[in-house]
Length: 202
Image (tube, rainbow, N blue to C red; front, side):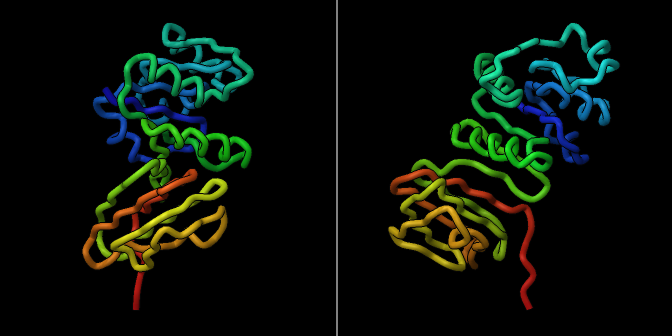
């Protein structure tokens, strides 16, 4: 089973396709965002301080109150999805707004079951070896937190057992002519941000 978790940030119409055949869990006010697209969640979880009264009344039987102040509502939703047996979890509505909330959401991507999706990127952890497929010039970036030793093959700019630190060096790479890039994280913590767009070239 796959799960889709919705945070309390604006959604785009791709939510309609993403929500098909998944366990849908709204993190608190994410329920309001879902209803804008007439999609009903399977559950709404959180401290319930940001969901509107109208939506809370409509979804009363779907609400799970969790007042754990040590976790964000997104973290609570991820825990619930894992408890329900989800093998893969996609999170939307997580980026933008307060930078502290966005940074905390990025931390969720270090769970290998989790992918964070926004309008431009899919974010996931690379804990060992990862192959990405895409058209030539598709953008991808690597962010080490705080550092990682990395090898890249098949990209516009390749690396071999090089240390990346959190900063600009790992960002803005591109899938090469073969359409296949292999990324290996030899040590450290590494996030992959794969773009859903091509970079223009003259």
